[in-house]
Length: 245
Image 1: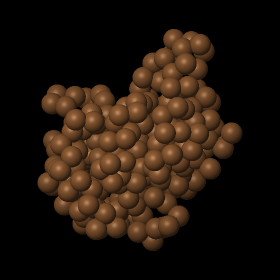
Image 2: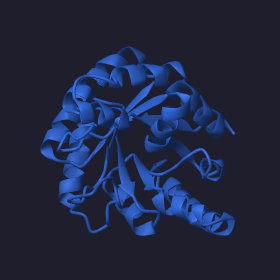
Image 3: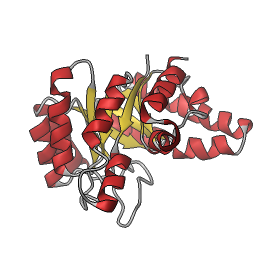
Image 4: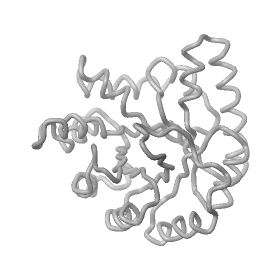
């Protein structure tokens, strides 16, 4: 079954816009778990504009008694403080994501020209901490082969191109999905697990859930946006139903 990892960044964004502790990120995590979510994702950025190091540590403590049942995924660029935070909290998975100056959210996966020595050094270091490593990549053969060469355990496919194609209609959505299916088969053949994330929602997941060998989807913005109107518990359950087919 495809695992859902709920990204709670946006809860922290709302909290930080006012200051204080409301809404509580920990409360959001608890609601997600009660609804049946098998995973929680955070992406602490260098400017701490949403998730903070304290949030990362508090969520780690909250999930510790559930280790093995609920997975914790920390996303981020491999800057020194992020690597140290991952070593301290030892999540189930760390998804290494490139960051471009001034970006609001992730805009692309790692190019295959990325420094190999530096990448393998970080991957090896986090492996020694017992953390599974996923590399965020575009749906193309070269970056997937690069990820395998870097020693990654999984890739996370950047799915915004699929989401935009899906919006343009069934034909383009299917054509894009077919591209993702081909690279998923390649990743599987190279021994990589397959995650996916970015702009997936209740509509386009109806198609994307059929991706071959898909292990996990990480979804935040769409879940929190709908939760404003109908509640977080209900939305998490809706996504779990879609992923279950």
